[in-house]
Image (cartoon, rainbow, N blue to C red):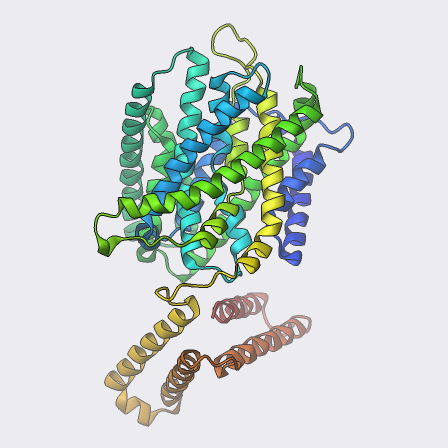
Length: 535
């Protein structure tokens, strides 16, 4: 049990943190290092196995992972590319699950169609965390990132529904297609209703009574569990509840988060996401020796061979179906004004190659019961499914994750003409806001500007910002490759912050100021550095 191996778990978490630091230094997506770390754990001699109840896996890991993905998504962008996202999220998962189901039956001796659908539901959804970690900082179209993030929200729900029905068929021995479809619609709609209702109540609480980050941040941590448990209590879709509720709270977050709560909540959720990812891969690493021992009639070489073939299948299917799904998105467009243009072969290949499997697939595999419902019979081929899932995740994460930057460079994909680059949008927004500030200052404080030097400096600073931003936009429109004054200004400001930070550290050693004052100044420098680092 977990409490009996607490020291081991803490040590492994520390190792995972070190792997994360290495991934940041090498600029490689951290999920790649986590899956390699999980594999490495399994080779540690005499390491005890960590057993966690399958019923608890979904409850512990799924709500926060899904909520974080929904929170980081942009509803505006999701709605813009909704047809592409829906055709990928549902169609691709269904076809992949069907292909894996029949392929596994033909490939693996003793494998049934129900087990094949269970495996298909597990490995069909790609992992958005891995894809966005790789794409972060790379010059790729915004449409690609939005589609990958949105697809992850939809395909997690679709794949987990397939997993749920396949598991029910195995446990009960019966399955009716039209009943499953009707149940899926009802479960999804009612789950969405629960998630939206709870999210709106929490939104009202946080907006009018929330107050500080000490209250709001814990509420956001509780929210996904509340939505999931409430929906599952009525046997509705907890996954859809968490996704819909997370999207609603994310869309309304600007009304109940100030800069302090926003920054703290973002950092807390980033930490929670990393710990959960690390914990899942730690668990599978600790269980791998037992899983290998329980492969029964299959050798490790055979299972790796099966995994390689299935990995090739899911990669090829995704690349082909992504290209076809964009035609489906065009067909679903109701009018020419809402038409989503087909992005072409290069863009489709990029989206297809970014379909790495990750933590949701692994959590689903770990959630398979140890025994069947009737008679306590051991669940058939559970260890085989777990091993196949882990190897497929390992192959897709390492192969596709490490080569994705090279693929992007090779394809040479750039932002389309209709999509204004993010940097230019930011500069235009900054220009408009600074103009509003200057107008307000001149309208309401014209006499104070003439009377007080400090107020005049504010106007001079705004004038300077406007001039710099206007010149930057002009240079970009003219295709200038020279470093702008704005870049130099930002560089100098960051250097000056570092100078003050070094000075603050020297002053701390002199014991001339109270620690409270020094910490407050350090926090002020942190906020200032964060502001200039995001420019």
